Amino acid sequence: MTNSYLTELGVIHGDMKPGNILIFPSSTETLIPKLIDFGYSSMALLRDDKLAIGCTWGWAAPEWTGRLFTLLEAKKMDVYSFGLVCLLVTFGDRFSAEMRSDYHCHDSLLQAIARAIDAELGAFPEQARQVAHFFTSALSEDPEQRGDIAELLESISQA
Picture 1 (cartoon, rainbow, N blue to C red):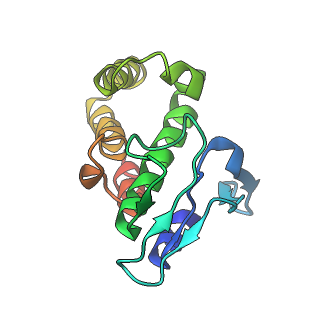
Picture 2: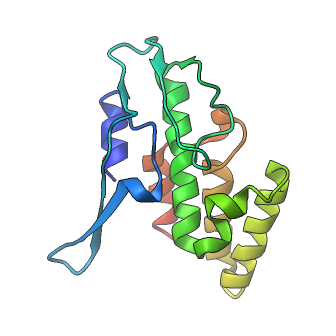
């Protein structure tokens, strides 16, 4: 995915959400997502650079506060937003930004995700485990527990 490459270059998108991802057909009958709208993006030249990150309500990581972030902190916020986009793509409107606001705590959101995974993949326990790992990693409240986008995509491609 484009964002994985961008983060290697020190670019943070800062506003990953469904409206900023376009889907194009390819010659191999697969679909290619392309990230657009870099209005909130930032670039770090050095690892310790501080970045101002924008966000859209409902798609931001829980630690977003409007303060400055290191490159690693900002990457982890993009991972969280990416996880939310994948949640919507995987399970539909059950997990839209408006519906997620009904969950009063992070644990209740994770429980709802676990129920959705069980309902969709209960007959396939190994795939269900991999999908659950993907979402618990991408959507961890603790940014240090989140993988990076490339790792997450690799882990889920085997499901």
